Length: 187
Image (cartoon, rainbow, N blue to C red; front, top):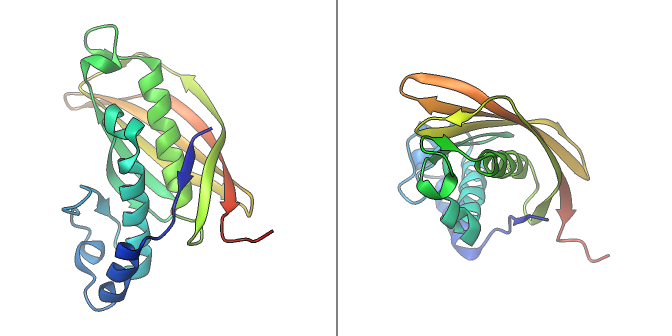
């Protein structure tokens, strides 16, 4: 089970207080110099939480080895990308199914995490992947969106596109079910 924790650390709390005065990249939609993510325009607190999700996910050893990057993240939506590397394939020019499925899982879970309250965690309960066609191209781009955000479970849909030159082909689609975990409760 992939555990994706979103606990606001001291440095993020510090950034929250200054973000009210200076919205920075979060307000303009510019690319963040720290994580490479293009954040959607929005309120300062929401933008800092989006950045916190991105920084935490990108710090995971499996994500570092995998090479996932965020393009957009926020308000129950997410766009991620994965450049082709020989470790992602057994066939030149194509991605293995594992790469597309893992990208879908991280994309759907990250989109869901943007809607969780501060101090909550998320764990992938289930994901169903449908391989539509061979994932042949220079990179994969995954677009995730939350379909239903509940108090205990959040469901996201993700479409993964293989990008070859100027052509984007939907090669994979997935439903990702996330368990929302209240880590602040003393039960």
